Amino acid sequence: PHTRGTDSTMAGQNVLLSKEVMIAAGAIGFNYSVTMGIIFVNKLLFLRTKFPVLTLAASHLAVSALFTRAAMYAGVFKPRDAKMDRMIFAVAALQTLAISLGQASLKLNSMGFFQLTKQLQVPLVASIEFFYLGRRLSVKKVGLLVIMTLGVCTACASDVQFSWLGALMAATGTACTSVEAVLYSHLQQSLGWETLQLLYKTMPLATAGMAVVAMYNDFGVSAPSGGVGGGGDVYEAGSGNFLTGMDALGMTLFLSSCVLGMAVNVSSCFVNGKASALAYAMLGLAKTITVILVGIAFFDGVPTTRVAAGTLTAICAILMYTKLTLDDKAKAAALKNSGLDVKEETLEVMKAPLMEGGATKR
Image (cartoon, rainbow, N blue to C red; front, side, top):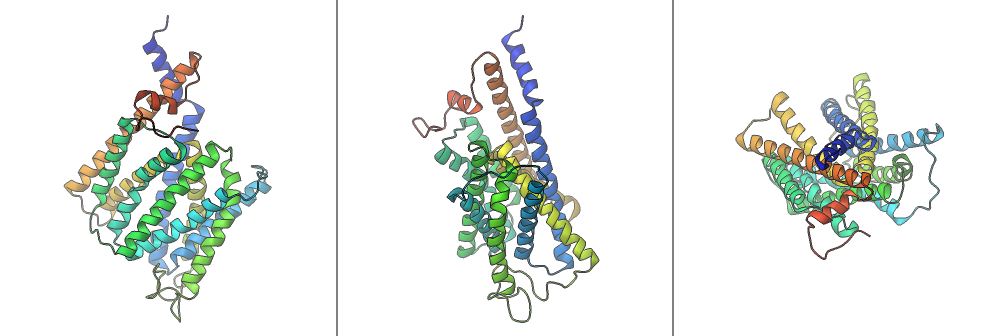
């Protein structure tokens, strides 16, 4: 006869090997890999050429839009018959704003402040999901989210300098990114959109918006006469002709960046749909930790007690949060096998709701 502990263990093993978890884990791993790849490719591209940052971002979105068109014509997915509603337009607009404001923040503030504001995406996403979608987290999970965020902030908190305008742009950009992630997740998980169906609608709009910003900043009014970017450019597109250094190697780096950018865009949306917006935000913390460690190992990063303590704290909190999440999935699976269809979110409320009498999932 099976005991309750045996059933729970078997359910846990089944959850780890379930198709849902394996797909989500694979998507997270792929997104992590291509993000690390594009960081190095872009670094080499900017060292070799004067290619404007916003024009490069617009190119990434354009290639993503072309990819979704090609996938549709190849029969990978069928486009969803739906009018261009406000939520689709909002996602595209938020994506354009997030990229633009992020680059402006990087110009007006120090790298340390830029990294700090990016980490606030985790608590912002959790708050938006609670108030907008009514999704609750247990007290343990809330505590771990706070700890991991503080850990990463501690690790990257160096040379923190900012202007009030820069701080406003940084905060607004992070808020746009957070709302965009929640909407991408909600459209897929609750409204039944497939990843490529959704990107088929949003990428052309985001490309158009980003192209307008890039043309205005890199080649239009704010670009100094005689070249692209420069002193009057709030986004610091660079000085001189952007074709400088665009030889065979430069073009290879540019095309590689576009392909990786497309992979990042598609896999990010996929992670939001198959995992959650909060999981994607936590993945951002892991990426920041990796960048810090790579900087120490291969570049001029300085290993300090602060960096080590913050990194170790964040990693432990992320691992503990992951274990709690898998335990909840295992318990939900065990209850479902016993005849009760209980979702993971229901377990969160049953265990320890964040706020009594607060919003409930509609």
